[in-house]
Length: 526
Image (cartoon, rainbow, N blue to C red):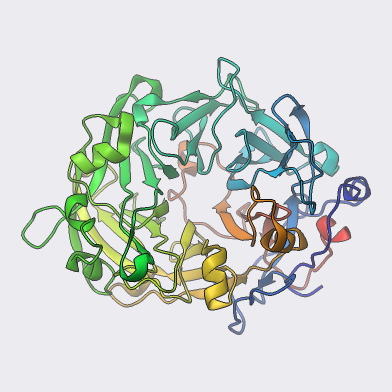
């Protein structure tokens, strides 16, 4: 095999065939690589035509750890949550059919090592009923690899779909975000025991407010950082752009070991030169406020402060009322290792339309610098400003202390406009005021099921594949393991890298670091 994986038709019959194939990912120890995450000659994004392979940098390969057709060990047939990537409540076949089952789209990943067991957790953001799954990376039989962690609230009702996820070591809980406007959206928690099993039903943390939260991240002080993704109204020439409409939040708990005791929800303000905040009332007038241009200009820096939200029951409205600064669909954030949680990086997706003529149309990656994670003020500056070729920035993770991994979710429309599918990039964040030029480490392909959906989708399943869930971790479940506390060392000392190829066959991959040890993954056996 080359550094990419092959795809093909995947049908229900494939499940039985794969049971006889040994799973190499999760059992093999990744080989040592140097400190450069992506090496080799530059390569282009995949064009949007037909079935395409994933292409990785020359020093990388990947192997699947889970995929949509894998049955859950403890399915909830009543709600239809029966497979890793499918909800079968409509009775349809699993893939490539005009009346196929609902694809549940496993999203962000959390890797944990609990009592010697290696697990990968994720929420599901598609389908008619949300749920949380666990992939047992030590289990060689794929038919016994994935289990259902939660899909009902304490009353037995179904859950909203989930997007973001993180591990809170202070409460020993998985925190998940429902990306929907109030009152549906918000943060949910489920406690795990030392073996990685749920100890109680998943519950809503009402004190953290309700909003279209996607990104969720802890810091060393026990604060919970939230990044919201709610699209704004159409604006600009021919209404091809969008107004900024989403916020960056910080929740300061009363007791970091018990988030049910409440706390204070804050939203980020970006200050103008005269010290006044840039507010929604200003930035949502026509989308052309000069501050939006300045925000997306290399070398610019802005003072920031945190504003308290009086009523978090509708976080979006509360942030607007508090004079916070809206962004053009910020999505996820992470702390830079080695900064003592003093640098927080977050992505902004932008308008995902090549015809937009508004400032900030193609988003950015921003750096928020503070003296500490609980500081009241700081400075904000762009690290990478998006272009039509590099945009739709979504999930984010540090590969090393200096190398930031950012992946695209540009959407089918922009894929068609630029004739390019999504990519994953490495950004060197040491450049200060100079542009952080993205270097491609992944050119995502399009599997057969996603190609089918893009051409003949029944309307409830997405088309082109999307990159999501980029995650770099050594699985440390203690406070020392909070993302940003340690400098990652991919493929060394227990550090592992995962991403999910959402839509289509919904495959979750582990990225491995030695191209000389090639093998056909169990997924390729189809």
